[in-house]
Length: 122
Image 1 (cartoon, rainbow, N blue to C red):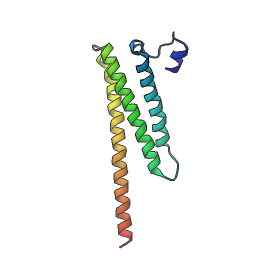
Image 2 (image 1 turned 180 degrees about the horizontal axis):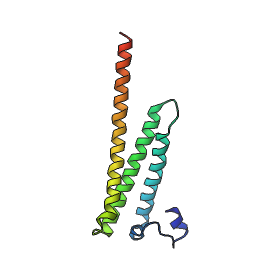
Image 3 (image 1 turned 90 degrees about the horizontal axis):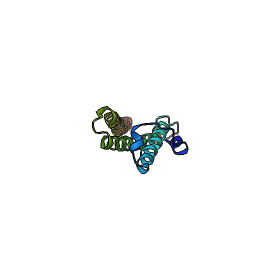
Image 4 (image 1 turned 60 degrees about the vertical axis):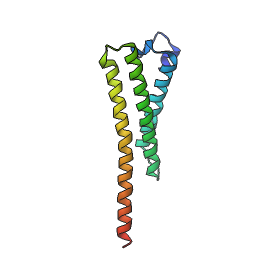
């Protein structure tokens, strides 16, 4: 998308041609930032694993927002093309599911740690 700002003849997506520039920038920003944050959190190597979980989770929420915005915009301009707006819609749902699963994983790990600590102090 950045390349299309510099070289207007380049079009990364035909459906994005019909979107207003603020929407294109919003979608690109959410997807780009979300992707980078999700990857950074997923590959977190610091001592505090919670930081990695939070980064990844926030990245997936941003990606979900970007995919949802893209799906809504495409469905507005091309309502008859279910594939064009259905794919980003389901990618957004997948990103949301992953963000929720991180919460569940974190809760499970914390519960297990509490149980282990309680068991070792008995």
